[in-house]
Amino acid sequence: MQVLVVEDNFSDAEMVTMSLKRVDEEIEVTSVESLQEAVDAVDSGKYDITLLDLTLPDSNGLGSIKELQRANESMPIVVLSGDDREQMALSAARLGVEDFIAKSEFVGEPFVRTLRYAIERKKGEQRLRDLADFDQLTRLSNRQRFNRQLLKAVGHAERSGELMALLFIDLDEFKEINDTLGHHAGDELLAQAAMRFRSCVRTGDLVGRLGGDEFAILAESLNSPYDAEIVAGKILEALQMPFILGGHSVTIGASIGIALYPHDAGDAEELLTRSDIAMYQAKRNGRNNIMFYSPELNKSAEARNAMIRELSMAIAEGQFEVQYQPKACARTHRLVGLEALVRWRHPRRGLLSPDAFVPFAEENGMISAIDDVVLEQVTEDIVGWTEDDLDVVPVSVNVSASQVLRADLLESMQMLLTRSGVNPRYLRFELTESVLRAEYTETRDALAELRRHGVQIWLNDFGTGYSTMGLLNEFPLDGLCISREFVGALDRKRSFAIVKSIVNLAHNLELGVSAIGVETEDQLRLLKAISCDSVQGSYYGTPMDAMSVRKYFLDNRKQTVTGIMRALPALKDRQRG
Image (cartoon, rainbow, N blue to C red; front, side, top):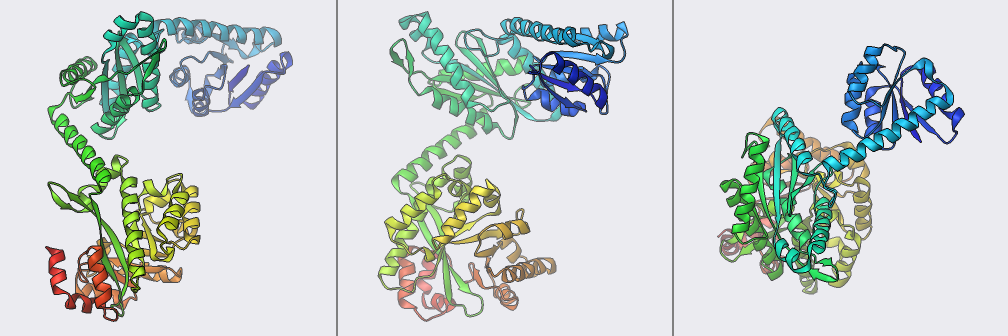
């Protein structure tokens, strides 16, 4: 038996512990001194029973009982009190405690027996509550319990101002399967579907069976309506796997309607009704479909889904291209590097910049595949330039968090380097601070290993995120990139001071430092004055394709970058066009 004692008086807690241990050494007792500690402990589900003193440093009276019940409604509670007044005992009983024991009654075996009876009584109550609140086939909340929780959730959302979604789910083809294979197969299908629904939601989301083949999911504290759409998409995906029913393999879909609070409804009943309406609209639109109650959100969701399809096709069909922008030495103006920039050659919209698709690809988990395309193209181009005996310079590649945090990052990069034959010293990974903060230890170790292979690691947009000295101290870095946000405001005293500080910091740490977004001669002059190592921006030229870079190298082996651009006015105009 695991016993939690909530008592701030040390001697009383010790007395309870010794009384229990005298009867049974196997009883494990944990003592806490405050209500907050008790709530955390009860929430863990580790304990069989809680012995609660009603006078605590952070709580006094019957309110402590309610707080513990909110944390774990199935936990049996026995009140320990120095006050044996009958009225207090009756009030505690009305709140649902199992017993009320005066501290003078901590007597060996009878005390332990009281606790064991309390645990069994609570288990019996819980079994009855389960019968009343849970669907016995799927073990999900039934309609009655779901509606109660929905009312509470709406009240919470009203007070907090948070967004909440209700997903109404109806299984497609269920009636046909039930009629063809029998009710037993239909029941098994419902039970298996319920398990899949649970695997698609967050820990705090509520899944319920409303009756027949109708289910509902309550998702609270959403950041945007599309969080609910993501859950719905996971459900459709989970249902695509065949169900094995009595030796038969069957597949089904689902029609899912989504209504939002407070966007679509003002109360719980209206929210349920409107999610049901949206579900029927999804069914009318061809089944195995997701619909919002809001027409505006449906239109937006359709646009998002179209973008997902187009991006998938672009990856499969090789519609992405890589262009390169020069990096020049701030002092000599000679070419010292290139930055690889991805472009999407869209079949209808023409050449798209990263701003038009990268944020969406990151949000929908497609950015890692695009990173792979870029890395493959960059290594192929570097090898080509090297084979032509050109004076190749390092190429910077912006790498997403998804790519860096891949479990097989090292293995995939080693395979890429081996397969392409590229010299790692020509590769420079540029990462944002947010990437370094995610999965700290794993990221640091992976980057350190890549660096040992010769790949340079630079920190991008330094100073605009959550920079700390800890990042610079712990991570294996080769340089810092100053954000265009600061470079564009160099004529302001504070921005100039920030940029100068970053340059000094980098040099003191023996790191390289590069300024991004240089557009004017004045910006270049200021950066040169504070000894910034390299610069990049439209002042030196716009991005160009790999063939133009080849010509750039061949025709201008000994010229400065500005000289190169003056020598190639036609190329410059063509790139801008």
